[in-house]
Image (cartoon, rainbow, N blue to C red):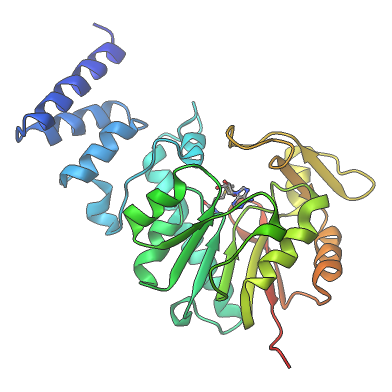
Length: 292
Ligand SMILES: C[S@@+](CC[C@H](N)C(=O)[O-])C[C@H]1O[C@@H](n2cnc3c(N)ncnc32)[C@H](O)[C@@H]1O
């Protein structure tokens, strides 16, 4: 019997044990997970069964991961991570600390935020860390099928389905903080102004819009040459379910980011923080003026 076959056989036994309500089901899933740390079925079973080896026990958050989560798949891809579940969960934790540090710079602590929209929240890589801190104050939106059902059911947040035409979006409310991590890193620059206007309209007067963009240093790291217009777009991304012409990979100079914001909204960001998120994303904070 090969390792792969024996792990599959073990999973089969674990499933049968769970269906029959046998007490060793969790231990069987734990053994399968230790053999294959990318096995989401085993990971999710440990969470569901409340097994002592589950991640939720020490992270004290909901650690269930949706099987369609493309960001998890990115971690699980061959050779990318030796411990994909741990790295995926830690990555959301990192985002939480990065966002908190950023908001501290403006003396607008996350914990004092009265209402927040996490736009383009995916399957909740970050939402799971945020939701327990802002109970009843967090709304999420995305376009991925099933993602918003998952966010509501697992993390107890309010949700709405986004769409591909920003002018048609009907935001259910206006929010003190609108956070959009790694969406503009995928949208063609030609669409940015439309999205900037729509997202700014979802911010309460006096509130903040926090966005991320690829740092121009990333172009050097990736060996990508920006065009004369300071832009690069490739029609491919981590999400095979999205149209690559509308959601690909976008790199630009900082000057392009600042120009697009100025042209779309008519004012400058209150903060431009290089490399604030992940390996290579700059953060931009826009303060939406109070109405006269
Ligand atoms: C790189 S992922 C980042 C996900 C999440 N912000 C995070 O940090 O884990 C970008 C997300 O943008 C979402 N997205 C793409 N087009 C969108 C749109 N028109 N409206 C809302 N979300 C969109 C994708 O489905 C994906 O979940």
